[in-house]
Image (cartoon, rainbow, N blue to C red; front, side, top):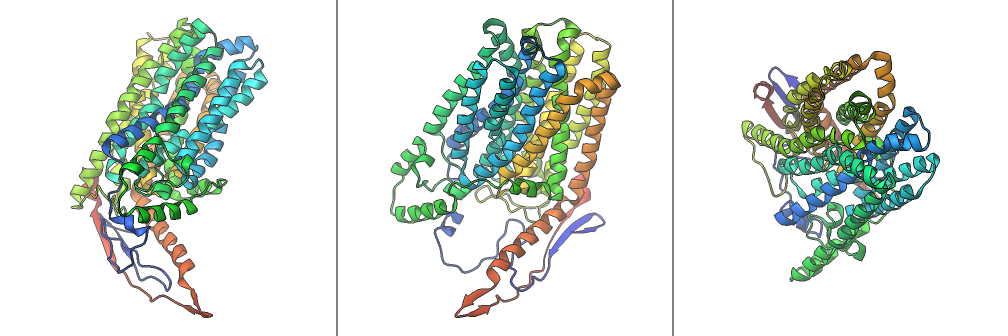
Length: 559
């Protein structure tokens, strides 16, 4: 990418022999004469065949599934003191159950996210919840710390993929211009857990004992799985295209898809059936390749986003862990009262999830308008040459600055044992700002990897969980060694470092993305360049493409 004074430009220069021409004009495609095939027949349709009501139902279901991932961790916090007393454990050993839970969650998501991208969303969700339910039953029945530790790992592995799955589903059903408002509810499902999880856990532990926490998780997740199997449609575009192709395998079909197939039978059924069978042949269930997730981490733009995501989660987990471990001693609270202290953070996070998704969608539309570009709500926008990094990250710096300003004094407030209202107000502010940050980063990741969104989200989940695990493991030692005040000052400085990295991504991410596009084109073209014809090889004609896209950086910055 060429950087000029006030402008960023890129040129798709002459391709080498064997490299296919790819248009770099925004939202335009070079028309080529081609014969319609089952795969290309769907290109003229809208981006998604699902109706608005069906989309809302799908988003509700994946948001609930994402809720379980964080609920399993948050509902556990109020029972930590009880388990420490039952098994005669130190605080460090109890925190170890959180650390290992998050490490396993990150590792397992690598396999689960890739599995969802290559095999479809429905089977991935079903497998995940089956494992999760079995683990919860085991946790409710276990009687030793070793069993608790192992079954928490199984529980974590089962539910690990639901968040990456959710972002994959959004990429399936929503064009770029609308992703923010759909990702918002998923983030709400994730972030309402800090509000409801500790309260539910505290109530159950107080009135029914700690085992009831795991029975509760087993029962509600079992009910969800039954509803999911009956009504949740497959959305993976590799399996059902835009959603209008009926899956051929019975286990891929929900009642909704089965009924829709019966109601929409028409003269082109043979065509759709052929297309569906062709899609299914390419998307059979295979063992997932975890290297695909690590390949995402090797991309410079993805690496920056994922590291910033992880640093944000490091601060969140440290904040929540310190609340669970120290509010009882600071304010003399019981399990239920400790659970209630999580409400301000969770409520503001839920509110921020709904609001900020719309904010980043608005900023995306504003950017396209300033550049004089149309928004294609049917086919989805062609982001080749579009400054999506600017559109998504412009709004992140104010909320990260506010989060840092609230996080730095938080430790001093606790250290001085200030009135309870002070730390809870700071948690409320941080809840909104942290979730706004995560929504911006998640939406940009889906934009950068639209063909493998669950795999990209799994890479995010890996770093999120591992840095979160470090936060849970070291926060107590850090607070003892550095003091409560300086510990949270350090966390605030990590957010400042993250903002610096995001500035680099906003300035250079478009160039890195263009290089990735060109590399993918060369790889694809090289596999098709030599075609054997009666023992001879033909080279495609060399093509030249001098196309240029420019936009004024100063205008975007000033906006």
